Image 1: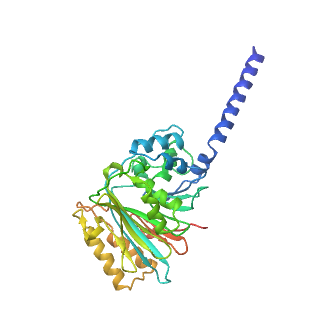
Image 2: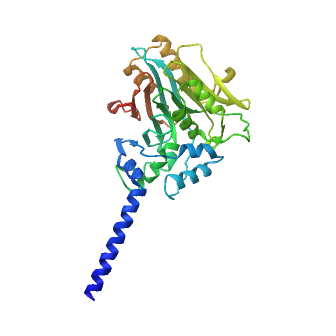
Image 3: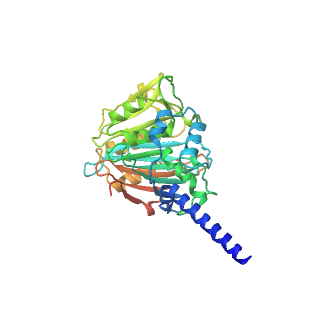
Length: 354
């Protein structure tokens, strides 16, 4: 009997070891990705490097016409069957393109929202450009009462959906993009085109565009729908200093250019000088940035840029600070700064091509 039990135990342990080896092989990139997850600010800011293929080229072949489609793709391709539910709510943001004292092209943005933990994500796809992007983790279901932890844990698995959820970013070619909410859009989709959503359109630009013009051409090849019916436009810039606002109006993709050396975007429709706003502080924030850039002759050092972003961050009607994160991308040397919730005491530097 003892001999039989010993044999059974050996067989069981052998099978368990075999299963563990198989699981390790199947999940090696996911485990490496989760191992890189680190919290960098107590407010709920994280950084992570994505290892392996996140299947974006496959996604571009089929696209998605609803958040459910993206949820199903991400669940099957990245989360190994663990379901995800996108959580979309409205936001108010400010972004601008200027230069620093060295003449570098600077892309700066605030993301104003209800409480939103954030993730700075590094990706290096085989068939695309290396990039760093900022992900709104509340979009993936995280909250103040449910945050990721450092490293590998079951609760962290939803962060693997991050490549499909960027809200802003910069790639190795010096192209940067950010979404900002607007009160309305007018779009007509082409049944012959694949459809992307708000955030996968950003992933398209980060992975595939080397200039602003390429970004516009790429976006024109796809339909778009806006997750949660939260309409957005995009500020896009590149290392040459060219910048545009891309909007969806008059049933087409519209490109809003500038005759200045800088460009500013806020939460209003800029196409054709329509200036359709939300009725809050979008024009005040816009004017404040314009005035600062004019007064400084379109040259801001890092401290001035940080101060300006913090100054135009949104406070709600109840006085609650809605500024969730601020990020500055230097499109000339591929570096930047990011910080959470106006916390000037923890401004985190980063380099994309380190």
